[in-house]
Amino acid sequence: VKLWVTLNEPWVVVDGGYLQGVLAPGQRNVFAAPYASHHLLRAHAAAVKAYRAEGRHQIGLVVNLEPKYPATETLADFAATMRADAYWNRQYLDPVFLGTYPPELAEIFGAAWPSFPAADLDMIRQPLDFLGINYYSRQVVQHDPGDWPLKASRVRQPRQTHTGLDWEVYPQGLTDILEWVTRRYGPLPLYITENGAAFYDPPHVEGTAADPLRQHYLRDHLRAALEARRKGVDLRGYFAWSLLDNFEWAYGYSQRFGLVHVNYATQQRTIKTSGQFYAEMIRSHGATLESKTKD
Image 1: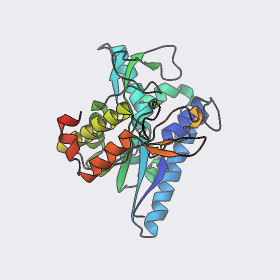
Image 2: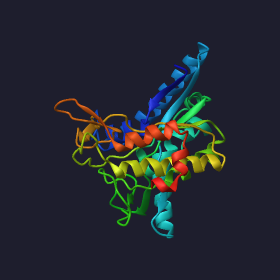
Image 3: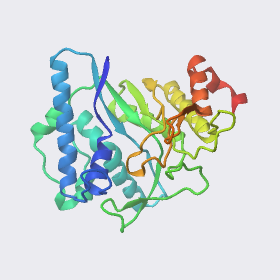
């Protein structure tokens, strides 16, 4: 194995486990969350240093990113968007690449935001060989005094397609986030380490599981990834989430992401039409993405 990652989605671990209380350890503790994030980054840096000391292959970090767009042109919505961006996107990347935390975090956490030692930030800023990005959706943001702790909430876009998890389908966001990472942190090798959608899979017909919404989602996001490459992003690879329908954390088996359908009662596997599309896309080296006749 030539590519290793230290952590996958540290934001999910901390937000779900220490602020929202929906993942282990099930806390809603604004004082604990910053320390959990910081010590995850310290652990990441220690792993990178140990790995490099042994002269091994490439090592990186995987983060889930979601571009934020203001709901209106008001200063309040713009400030809310910056807070959401700092909390979701910059909280982990700024320390790793810039050696500092976004200033908005002190505003978000208030008295609960600690003063971390400069030596810790120096340690966290370890050079990476690549960055992995998990992308699923975007968020349109409004100022919301009732939202804790960001005072910023999502504005659902009713005219857009949404997945089974109510995530907006927005391929342009993938291009935007890849370009943003390159602009902010410099040209570095990027991988799309997760990208996919949970949709209801209708009953099988003659041994085939048809899932046109997922197929279209993959097609459009792969095109968005290619567009980012055309614009100069050093994108090295793409991984669909996921090969099989899986146990989706707090949602259990209710949400299906797989390219292959799993009958949980019998364990029978059936390749979905999205899986067939993905296989043909690989065989053709992406030629099917250029064909408008397959839309």
